[in-house]
Amino acid sequence: MKEPSTELTDHQLVLRVQKGDKRAFDLLVLKYQFKLQAIIGRFIRDVDEVADVTQEAFIKAYRAIPSFRGDSQFYTWLYRVAVNTAKNHLASKSRRPASSDIDIEDAEQFTNNERLIDEATPENALLREELAAAINDCLSALPEDLRTALTLREFEGLSYEDIAAVMDCPVGTVRSRIFRAREFIDESVLSLIKKS
Amino acid sequence: MNESKKCLTESISALVDSEVSELELHRVLKDLDAEQLSEHPLLDDSSAGKWCRYNLISHSMAETSLGFSDISAAVSKAIDREEAHGANPVRASLHALSFSALGRFAVAASVAMVAILGVQQFNAMDPVRDKSFDIAEMGIQSAEQAQGPAIQFPADFRPVVEARSVSAGGKIKTSQHPVLVRVTNSDRQPVDDRQVRSFLSEILEIHSINESDLGIPGMLPFARHIEVGEEIGIE
Image (tube, rainbow over all chains, first blue to last red; front, side, top):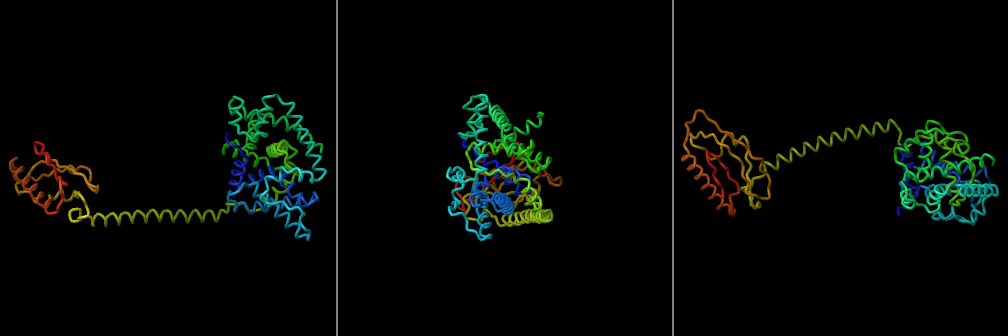
């Protein structure tokens, strides 16, 4: 089966940024801002500082993006920029970086590390739990064909083509089902975020 | 949600999964550019908001650790103050100009070099004298054809002939396409077939002697097939 990846989108967006399209960089910021905040939050506890350093990390990444050659995944590269920015921030404030440093090579593993999630701020942890619960409720309430399509995509990581083969339907139908499932979940997520 | 917006939002959903074409990506970016990023895209119904929340849902389902401050608008404003990459018009035009001029010069130089080398090679090539050639082929210049070969026909020779090159093979493919030669000379007296055959035999005899002197074995490397009423075969 073909291995799907969001790296293709990242690569397309990076190429566009390198050609001068700033809106493409907006999409990368919108996509990764929450993940990057979580990474920087491992070094810096203050929520406002985390936001500032994340912003700084994105600006550094933008300035450095012409030198990004695509040898590594964009997210791994961005992760390195974020970690270095956080460390520099602490050094400039004469504070030692967090004792349990994250190995830069472990970028992908870090995001799924339960121990690190436990160390997130209580507010973030609560919101994350609420978000997860809302998404689960929505998934349960989805019609079966929509739930299957989204589950195969998000949990199994299958491409649209592979999902179409599994569900015995056209690729366009898969695309439409995943979209409708996301729209259904999005309504709940939006109301949750507004409430928070 | 109208049909156009729905179609665009579906493209955004597919973009989350890297399942869009360049054209769709272009359309999404164009829409993003048109509607401008709001202060809190996470909370609105814009394309940016949809993209942001779809990714949030995706990361959340993957149990990714997340922070929840929406800093995208602040970053976007900061990026707008930065110079766009690869978009310096002066540098770009100079770059384009220099490459354009260099390109034209390179093409002109290449053509000139090929012409010079071609002429040199053509002049230097003497297949009869060059012993490294297994089988020689002799080119016929149109001017030479008009003037007649080195061995001149008799003064009264005035045939209306059709001649063409016949290659006996060889590695060097310098011979040109068959050439139709029509020699007319109104001042000369007509000759009969017997004289033509006799003269042709003389040419072939000289050619055979040359052939044996040069040590070229086998068939005639080159001969002129002259048609005068009937075919003369070359074995």
